[in-house]
Length: 219
Image (tube, rainbow, N blue to C red; front, side):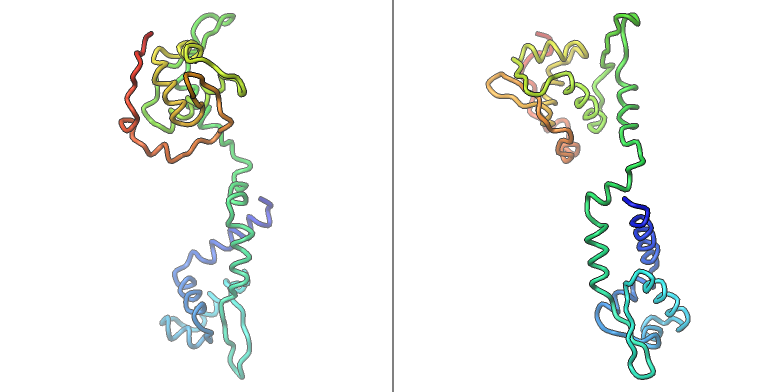
């Protein structure tokens, strides 16, 4: 997100981070009002109302027109919709974290749960344990999924052989890879999917809701 857009976003939230200004917007969304009317309806002093209107005018959220000796204010619906369309969309909001290392937490999880066994020359990575936290487990599963090549089909025994290198409970890991849609299975053949971001609603499921494991952990 460009600095100008971030500035608009900050000003927008600051302008609306006030109960009185939110109420002014609500009133002006229904009908035009003068400062005097707003002051009476909100039980505020006129200078206070004028101050709030000035803040809203800076973002073009309200417009003003002359009516004799009075000034009438109304909500600028087009400006509100324009800000919403330009800024409040997923791609734009995601760009707010362009300078944030979003992989730092995953790296920490991997560091905590994966250890190196053996010498420096023959280092073997092993999974200390399967995380109880489903969010942390997903990090581990994504790491394990990368042990398989996209476009290659694996018989079940081959999948087991890969997973048992990292943890003896390969049956649970294999089942979870399928459950999180990181791998697919058909007629005993497995393959890795292109899905890097599984359905996060799966994190809300309780582990006990999964179908029971029917195969032995150690074959």
